[in-house]
Length: 285
Image 1 (tube, rainbow, N blue to C red):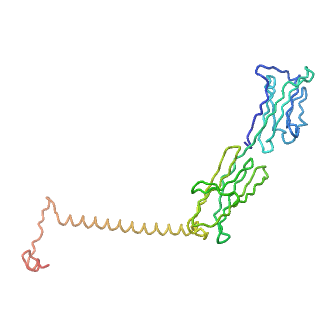
Image 2: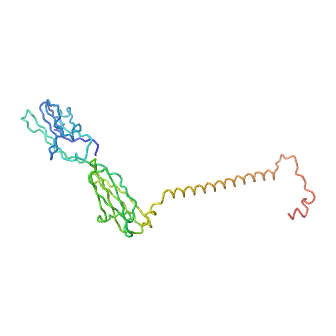
Image 3: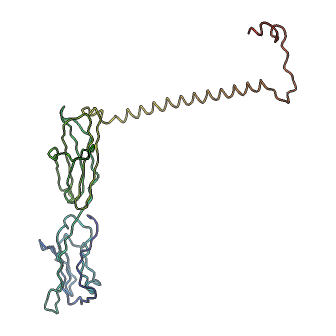
C-alpha cells in the first residue's frame, strides 16, 4: 500500500552463514538497472544509490550473516511498482554468484468514496451525472449501474477522464449522459482490480427529473417549515396543559363544596322564601 513499508525477500536456506567481509550484495531494478542499495566489504559509502531510494532502502547486517539479504523498503510510492533484482557474490569463490532472486512489487492505494453530482438537464431529452474519485492506484475501472435491476449501463454513454496527480496517484472523473425518464436510480462504481475493491455510490431522482430545484429540496425552506411546525405543536401542547390544569382546579373546588366530610360542624344554611326546595321558582330554575 502506498505510504507503507514492505520487505522484499531474498534469503538462502536456513542455517547458512556468511562473512560480511566476503560477500557483495546488490539490489537494483531489473529493467532500468537503478541502484537501490548494496553492501561492499569494508565500504560503508552508499553514494551510488539512486536518489529515489536513498534513506528508504535497508538491509540488516545481522540478517546477512545468516543468509538473509532481504530488502526493507520504507514509504512505498507508486514509482516502486516494478521488478527488483537481488544479487549476492562471494569473493572467496572468485566472485561466484551465490544467490540471485527477482521480486515483483505491486503497489496499490484506496480510491476515495465516489461523489456523484446532482443530475441536471442540458436539454429537454437528456440527463447528465458526474462521478468523481481521487488518490487511488492502479488505474481504475469505472462503471455506471442501473440500481433498479443492478444491470450495467452501456459504457458508450459515459466519458471517463483518468489522470495522474502530483502524488503519482490516479484521479478519475466520469460523465454519464442518458435519456430523460420519469424516474432514475443509478450508481457509480469505482473498481480497484488489484485490491478487489468496488466503491459504489447511488444517485436517485424523482418524477420531476427535468427540474433541478425539485430533485433536492431547498434546505433553508425545509428548516423554516420545520420551525413553524414545532411552534404550532408547542402552542397546542401549552393549551392542552392549561385546559387540563383548569379542569383539575374546578373539579377539586366542586368536590370540596359538595362534600364537607364527617368532621363538618356547621350545617348548611336552610333556603327560605322563593329559593326553598318546595318553591315553584326553585324547580323551575
